[in-house]
Length: 389
Image (cartoon, rainbow, N blue to C red):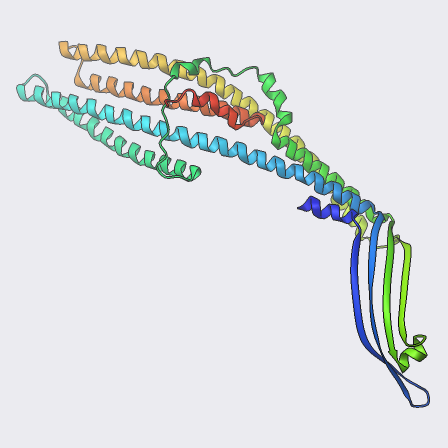
């Protein structure tokens, strides 16, 4: 709309005006002459030269690029927020599942400790340690349930639907081969980012505003034409307007306006515009630096995320073996009940961390694309392929 409004400054304007009035005049001899005048006419104006209007039109066109960049930024932000909320729900579900599995295992260990105490093969210490672990994990289950409800509500709000059920991952091994490419390649994309495009367009708009204010010192030239008709009646018309009847008039000409002195207003406006232009130039440089830093951090985060997933997968395997060995040692009497409880808790904790690390890896890959300014809905297709149908 702003661009269309600005374009109108270079188009001709046409206006109509009508007037009806009663006129009169007193004569030196004490008499009076009265009459009536009814007139109407068309007036047209076309700008021939107006530097301020030209700058305003260019400024409105460039402002459209700012709005388009804002839209692209908002779309990328929405993609990332929905993806983050989606995987937050999956992570909360996994955290609840591991907490419940841990609770079940501790419950079985607690029952075993009670039976062993009753038959005299274990002390009350084993029972109390198992009970303490059970009470703790029960609280963790409640916290996980509340967290899951919160995460689901956040996702429902973003999607605009209730009861959204995210699909879990089905190809966890494919995460290891996630390609992050070269850091230099990602940094090269920053210049095409909508954030940089917005800042560049903002600088262009500021320059055009400076040009517009500087044009206040320049002349303007307009083409003007008019066509009018007037009907004069009465004694006033006969003596002062050349007689009764209908008179027609027309004119065509140019109007030149040149401000010579405006009290310093234009100089002040130019100074203000130059300061805002400097600010826009600094904003552009800051946008480039911020995106470069964000891209670098996201890239390193993606690389470290892949290493973290691999490390936690190894830790999960080790924790399973450790739990099996501890359970066997407990059966033969070389390990105590607390050792089994700790090994079991360690396994489930590692599994929860591993699940979250996998989700974080996927979100970080999207954050890298957002930082570089290349995130689009198409980037979700490879992630969709990893989810169960």
